[in-house]
Image (cartoon, rainbow, N blue to C red):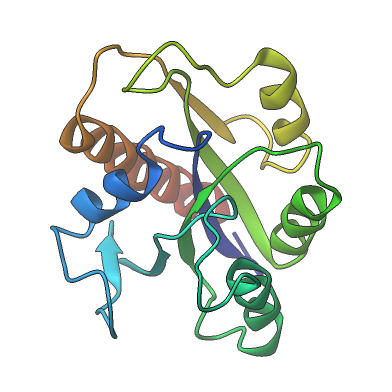
Length: 172
């Protein structure tokens, strides 16, 4: 990981449990206000629970502002974890991923199927997403069904820890 930070994305469509997974990952820390970084494998991560498919009433540009802040405050966002929706029909989706890739080695855990129904992330969406991910270990497909937020968070935490450990070893 020489000069770049880590970006880990939890990927799925609306109501797939992305934000709930991150809530569980952060040990159910309060959703609002300043939360401490989430430390995994000795690395501190800023956690962005709200996805690009969430439109907060107060600020519909919230995710765009987050992406801009990554460039404006590179030390604060050197390593981050974020919920992400693969809406490739929207041009800004690829713009967000390009911005992440510019400053970070990007990894993703894709929640393949909604925990609330039959909706899935398609093979085509995974292929498009993969263009922006770090090679080799860039993506993990989570396909267990049914699943809980705690199960997803445990798998995601393990994926992050293994990835960080492998990348650090490769850099030495």
